[in-house]
Image (cartoon, rainbow, N blue to C red; front, side):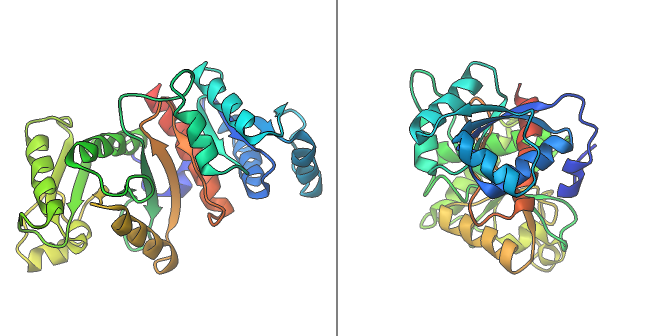
Length: 303
């Protein structure tokens, strides 16, 4: 069954708990979300960080972490290495950022000897639950890649497909966003969109994946707009994935959904051997909890 609302992620019948490695666990909101995810049967956490501070937070907030495995490591670089090694050794299914800089964690993730590198490209997939849209929308990449090339976009699309399918969607519809629908050699986003569409038509992304574009945002999410503009596409008005041409567009759309449309969200970094949760300090507790549930489902799909 396809998940159409983020709340459904928390109400699934979890057969087996995923193992989550939390790097620098002395983070209040992250610890809140981890404890709740454990209560819901989603994960079994391994907390890596300052044991004393982690337990102090738990005690103050009345969080039960008594039965959690805690690896005491105050040095952030070493904590990141431990977390990544747990995943690379198969002792954890995915990894989450706590009170540690993103750069420190990603340095460990990209370590050539024991990291989580693959031949793919790391890319961010953000899922939004918007009251005015009939299903979840997957936005990529508004967090990792600045100005992706066509080759990068191919991998970004592949990463997003895994996330959409992990949530039970048999068909994936990808809208390649641009400022207009006609191909213009001066606008690389339109040229790349056409190439991605052609690649999809050959079956490159799979038989149940439809990639179309270039198209403006209104056409991707509104059948009325597509009808008015005489834009004929299986994707228009029913897009699952919004592929943005650069990080500015992705960042702008994402923040607009959050702050103007009051959309709920969850996010995951794809392209590594396992999902990576790089939650922001600005993310709500709810968003962190949804991200943990998302990471769990994606890790099960990948493995």
